[in-house]
Image (cartoon, rainbow, N blue to C red):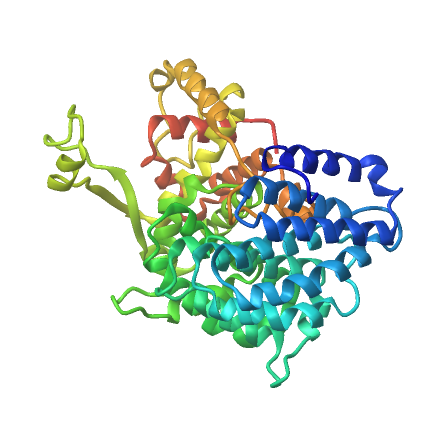
Length: 466
């Protein structure tokens, strides 16, 4: 590629990308793969600031590493790691970040483990980079690279220790401490959720010694999170752990007291309820939904005392007024405060409203053990309009895999039991059980819902599904 001009470089790389994918790379040999890697790395060094060529280059590395020809993955790794390991250790900013992107791309192609000696060759340089990188993009990319290593070969990574005797978990814990520090920009830690969930899923009991201080740091950072994506990255790991070990995690949250007097449970539930509707990613939205149903049904007094942000309070100053930035500062929005369980129920119902399934189920009048009816016949005269609104909201509901913290980059998550749960049937079953047993005073809580939410409850309980 020495004679390729800048204008034609992308075309040449695209052609090479297409060729490496032919017949799943069965025609490749280790020698040819080594030569291709050498050419790609030389071109990368000359065009390190070209994001377009880097994007195509990383794709090629993944295709090479995933080739079905024997020995090609090993050759790709052996030609890449020795060159790029010093690069990430000795640089910061874009050079460090782009080199990590290439390394991540290589390991994304691994089909069965990373290969013998890979962690030993890369980990020292990686942890040096993770310890000193100041650039947010480099920190974020380092988080992605570390997540990939844990996901692809947890046993090899957990078995590694550095020259001074520090274990890999200790080094990971130190890096997580940096990510969760208020001194690090929130944008740098948007991939923290993926790292934490992967660590909890793959490391198992090995992570137990660091669990308590780690979870305390997560909830402290959550209190100061400013963005919905940053909050999701910290909430989803808790949702996963509560789903797996509710009593242990809830006990820890209740005993964690922050500087402002709130305990960890209050901080988590308030942020969760405020951000849940903006969660991105199939797995993240599912684990959040399922764990909220689990918490709603948990007979724990502390869950009854937490209040969270409810609906917007419409005042004379905000009614029928176009709210500009300056006016918003002068007259900030006010929200009601409602019990956590009521907000959780609203969020659970919103998933059915978004899915749109309940809008077409229909249903008959339902009474709740002598409590006031979900609604009179007159209340449902606009049901068709509400159903149309639900179908529209379903059309507008989308998920994406190009956002940090979604977990969709991990193909294994698509096989996770959480992904096999039928959203609609699970929620209908939940609502029927709550109505039948009056779980958490469900019958009285229904009366506090909006007309649209009552319609969803009525349709679910009278449905023949689940």
